[in-house]
Image (tube, rainbow, N blue to C red; front, side):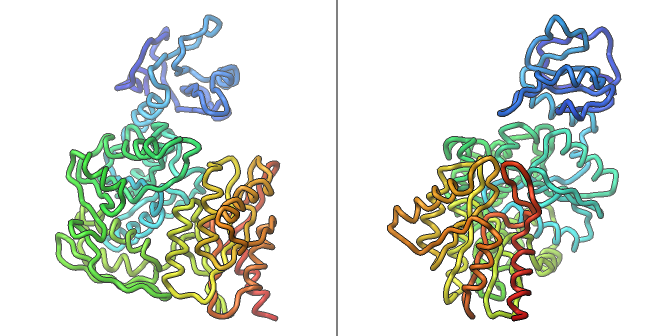
Length: 488
């Protein structure tokens, strides 16, 4: 594709090019540059793409895109733009011929619930005879393909490439988790969303966004992008969702428990085996049974039902799809055992998510709740004592351990979590840095009727330290320890 075609809708400040070169691809890492590529020089939090221009040029970059003017010493084609990230997204959409225009795209944003909603919608669409693809926290998958997810929402060129592959391989719908980072960094610019879903908002990523107001404004951007304008779906029970509803100009389907919700939970029962619920909707009442546990999952079902109705999925397919969902990796995931205890692995890694998780467990009348959790390094430090307070209040016994410490010392992170217990004057905890030993201690300690909750890493199958990344899965670790205990 010619450079002039790629620059359509890009806000160009100046163009220095002797000709109109043929472009073979788009790269944002110098190591990924191939001959004939455009290289986007991005200034990030830790590195500046301009520092890698020599490598990009040596590897054959045909054009450089930057917010800066071309330096005198570089004679390669140079496009100066107003916003490099916006330009990258639009260039990628143009290069891959706007694949989102050939798909039904559902964007899901919010602090909690995104992953579970994609799994529910995926089953509903499969049941209805469609071929959905998913871009999300656990993985990117469609039509027999699976890719490990490096981040919830990939960089713009990667997203557009995936969407193009989906189109070429017969995918009908793309279900996309849209993170606040991806919205702030314009990774999803150039994507046409048919439906945008807002789940809820609670304190997360405040090391990046600084305030809840900034966090909300980042999430809100999804609802004002290039929509194909079918509808938005919003949780009316969440205070931030209620505010969002008041600010949206487009048709909106609200969901929740409030009487004014368009899709409303009317009655439900939740126990250790799952839930049964009756939901009112514009198409009448829907009653379903699911093996998923917890009131938070009922909200996820309401969101998925709302989106499915917007997509004109027949009610019988919605109900059959819901009943097909058996487990969500790392989301209130049950680890079966013959010890008479309940073992749950969950991704909860904020104080709000941990509180919802433990309240859901408490509602099921366990004899005792034993919690194992830590906090990730190089992430929001302010949430650590808050998570400690939640654990102190809602767990009978907590083992504070290591999560993904990254460049930080695990003992320092644990000490900051411990501050939450000290604030409340609670001593119902111990510290075990080694995560495997912490899980083992909890399982050995548990007695019949107790619940062991392992929180923070969920579906992850690795642990990140300062100098290495090692294989580690909470689910597999718990299974191995349980197998050993069952043999004794």
